[in-house]
Image (cartoon, rainbow, N blue to C red):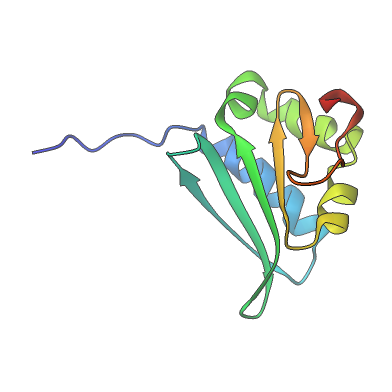
Length: 111
């Protein structure tokens, strides 16, 4: 019998990013789940049945920042600009900054 594990990430931090995305993409839905193989929180922004944006936030980023610091840091990094430009390509948020794997797009902190 396996012991049920507690959520690996502070739910308040998950909700902070959820709200940030909902405000930026008003009218779209935001779904989130934890991806244990990548040690990251996965967010999907969608319109109807279509996924319009995919965002992966590393557990290390969430563990290393308070929920009060997350939104100002995401604004500083121009996260929404990267997400909009990436479209359905995945956007990765780590302690190093914002990256769009498979492109040369990255925040200054990630270079």
